[in-house]
Image 1: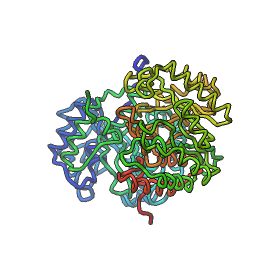
Image 2: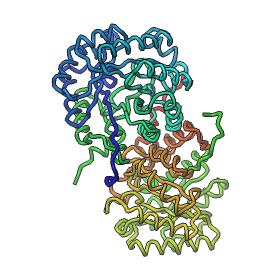
Image 3: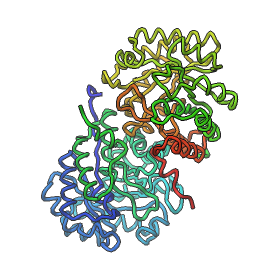
Length: 304
Length: 304
């Protein structure tokens, strides 16, 4: 399809945050920087670098304030987002020089309570306050709508709840609204249906998707999202990840799987597959467990 | 999506033929029967049971004439297809009581030469003769168009070649024309494009697709085919398989992955996932290697 005009898709690699946050082995700040450097070398233009949450809750993210300024000074052209749970987190992120922040709002009552010990209404207000404050500081913003398909505690998430929260995050002027299949339970028919409805409440160019690959449908879901007109994707190099608060959630869809699918399907990503494999190899060595998405065996094949 | 009217999709499990043909361990006829029984128990309504090729070329299929009558007498309602390479194979299949046969035609010159030692034109004529003879015998017929995306020897297969061969197989009155991604190189954008074009030369209800999962895109490709209106799919339980004549080809898309995706996306398959997992477990035990598609870990998870 190389003769066609290639449309660009935008990938945010969330391995440094969503990927690492619940790994058994904690990476040193220098190793996180090296992983980010490998991603930048591969052509990744946007990452989620850290989260400014309680170090007690997520010890792997305790070096956020140390890591962020180093990332931003070494890779000034890299879009570098950090997750903040509330105004206090925003304050810490701002003090560390953050230029882009993300808030996470779950679309079910129970998930918010388990994750941040608040009900849905209160969580939504906290997200709105945080977005407004970030905007006042001139920061770029992302708003996650988590468990947007199924909640591990409540089952199927009502589409109405997702639409309502996405509309509120849009009204709160979030630059990107990230529809997250937090436990990796979505199937492409559902992605098509939900994104079709979401396009009615949020301009499609502000929509992003965040898929986990628990049931091996991450790439199929990404294709369904592309077909629905979405051009912004989260992914995690090597499929590193999983959500510590969502039982049974596996890693994110692997960046290399997404890039392979998108490029072969006629989209430009700006990202090099061998470059991503180098990042997977590095992460695998440091985390001491096999990593890589569904295509990794093929990507690592010997070349003649 | 249970409240919606569910459209049916038709799955042919090719594990007994495409799956087993190049496995290191040869299954006894009784084990093949047991595998087929487990598939029938799971709700599979169509299988590819064997191939009537030279036992020297494919020793695993040497018991075709013994297996087929047993399958058909034990499971009279099961659609049971067998692969025949030519008129001689058809004669043997007919003598064994075959009710449905499949021919395989590769869409590249080199693949035909490597596979059956004929050029493309001659291979096409042989397929046409075999289909005509099968029709005269009152058999149901399938015609594979192999390497319909890429050829391991020639690279990208010209779409024109695929369209021309599919049109010829349709003119030869094949009941189903199976578009095969023999080496598992296709991506959903290509599937969408090629099936869109194929619908112009073959009625969509006669089109089937056969994907391999070499690059982890089998399920995404199946979704693209569903979106293109195709409702007939090959798959192999446990992802068993690979093509002995196509370097680098991994197993077929796993039946359990396809069923999971289709059911969650609002289609009816008539197939039980726990039933398929039982078949995977049996095949794994007999073939003495780990089997299962991309969702197998999730499908085997402990239930509370």
